[in-house]
Length: 114
Length: 119
Image 1: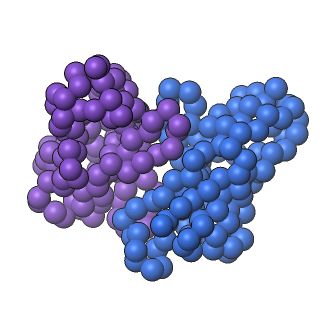
Image 2: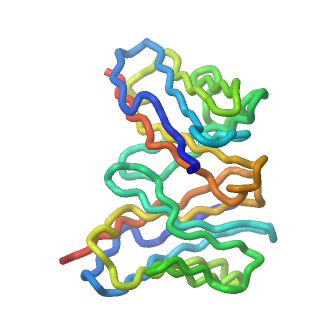
């Protein structure tokens, strides 16, 4: 079974600083996708970034980037120039293949201090 | 594009009654829909996967007779919590995938969730 582990229940960052959220996963599959989702107080899940396992290049979306270490099964999210609006729960997720369900980690609550 | 709606956004019911939650894909055909449950300060736990026109596949530990899922069309899936009890109080989130068109073959689109409170 695939598992996703987020070892940081809570993280805090100063506004404009950089923060890294950790995620590790366990799988024996070769075809899979990894995601980071943001869940603000509204509870709406918002896709932040995704990474295809077959791609060696780390995904980047504006201030958000990942460090994908396939051999180590690690998928961390770096948020640069943190903004107050980044405060939310962040979930790391794994999906096997293209048409399967998604499994989520326990989440990390990010606080941004002004 | 790729909007998923849920109705109602919140519902309060008495113990023993049944509650139906609707999940709609507004601008795409959802061949597969997923239902998640999220308890306070916890992660999303997959309850079941439903494919249009076929029976839902439930995760281990989820009672299929209690959580009835119907995916009768490519734009609508419903979750009915039968004989609800206070322990069923939770936040229920659906998500949908558009596998046919290829537009969103990596991504699940999430609904805004439904908060169920059973008194």
